Length: 436
Ligand code: HSE
Image 1 (tube, rainbow, N blue to C red):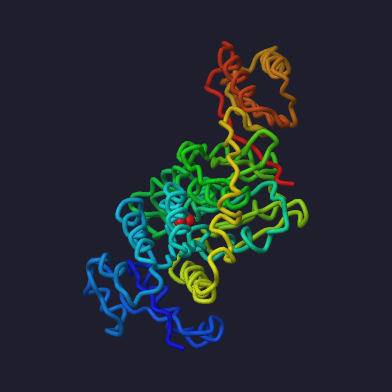
Image 2: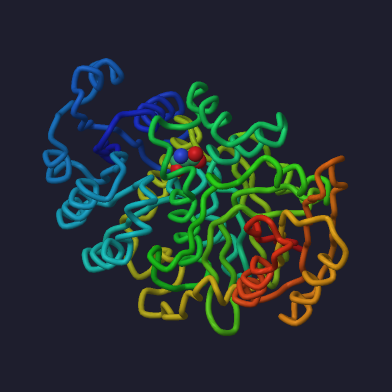
C-alpha cells in the first residue's frame, strides 16, 4: 500500500524532531501502522533551513496554504503555534478534508470547541497528544486507558520551565529573578517566558485535560491562573521545614456543584512521588474511582519527546482514517452530543488547605488574636511554625497551615488579620493539596 502523505507546517525544534524520528524508525512505524508514513511537503518561512534539515528529500514551500490545500496530502501536522495563523490553517486543512495533528495547546484550549466541531462536520480527526505534557501519552491514557473510570481529579506538573526554576530555587536557595536568568542562559526558558512563568501554558494544558476527563467543552477563559513570579525563596524554605515542596500544579477536580480548574503554586507533601519530580520533567497524577491514583512521568518538551507524541498521533490517524467517524475515539473522549455544561467554579468557591505567612510584632496576645480570627471564620489550624525573633528586632514570621476550607473564608480572614496593628506585612497565601 502507498504510504500515507503528511504535510508539515513548521520545521523548528519539534518539526525537525518529527522528521528525524520518522526517518530513523520508519520501518518499525510502518509495521505498526500497516503502511508507511511519509512527509511529502514542509512549509516554513525559512525555506533554506527547511531544505537543509530535510536533505532535499521532500518538497519545501514557504506558504503553508499550499500544503493545507494540496490534494495528495492526507494529514497536516501543525507545529506553528499560537492562535492566529495556526487557527486559520487548521480550519482550512479541515475544510479541505485533511486530518490534523497538532502540538498547539494554546490553539485548542482557546478555539478547541470551534475546531472539534468543524472536524466532526467534515468527518476528520484532530489529534493532539503532543499538546499536553510532551512525550507523556496522557491524552491516550485519559481518553482510552482510563475510560472505565469516573475521573475524580487530576493534578499535574505540566510546565518544565517553571518546574526547573522551582527546583533550582529550592536546591540553591536563590530567588526567582536570579534563577529565571540562569534558565534563560541554559535554554530552559524562552527569551519571552511569560506564558510559562505566568502559568498560562500550564492552564492551556489542564484545560484540555479537564475537558477530556469530565466530558465538557474546553473553557480556558474560566480557568484560574497564577504563575510563580511572586513566589519568594523564603516560602520555599518554610514549606520545606514543614515537610512540603512547592510545585506549580495544574489542578482540575470534579465536585457536586461544578468543576475546579486552576493553576497556581501549590504546597505538596514532600513524601508524595509528584513532589519529587525535579528539573524540567513533567508528571500528571490522575485519580479515577475504579483504578485509584495513577501517575505519568516523562519529558514534557524537547524535539524527540514531543515528536514521539506527534508520531503516535500520525500512527493513530493512519490506522483509523478509513473507519466510520462515529466509531472513532471522540476528540474530547465523550460523544460530542453527550458533553455536559457543568460549570467551572470561581476561585472563591474552591476548597483547599492553605499556607499563611505573616510578619508580626513579637508581643503578648498577637498569636491569640490571629487564631481567634481564624476560629471565628470557621478555619481549623493544622500546623504552625513561629520563627525566633532576632536580637534587637521584636518581629517574627508566623506560618500557619490550615485544614480544608473554602477560599472565600480564607480571603475574609486574611483581610481581618491584615487589619491588626500587630501584623506588619500583607499575608502571603499559598494553596496546599494533600493529593491522597
Ligand atoms: N514551554 C513548555 C514547558 C513546553 O516549559 O514545559 C511546551 O509546552
